[in-house]
Image 1 (spheres, rainbow, N blue to C red):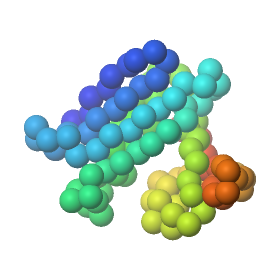
Image 2: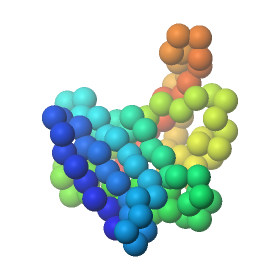
Image 3: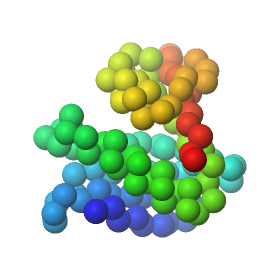
Length: 112
């Protein structure tokens, strides 16, 4: 089950398994055609079980139904697990940038 909470222009989404929250996502509305994932976390004991992909698919469906055409995010260059996850879920690397000293990739995906 997915529960969304709207506050200001952002959307906080929680994923439940039964009555337990097993993951969270924060989507930022940057007044562009797409949404920006500020963070996505599946709690450690629930990782590598497919929950993250299901969570992302459900949020994409919600966004699509509400007129959103794409999603973007930043992913640290040294976070290979996150890169694999996002690539497996249809994201691609758009650019390499730096936030202070730390390099990161801009990743994006069109929703359809």
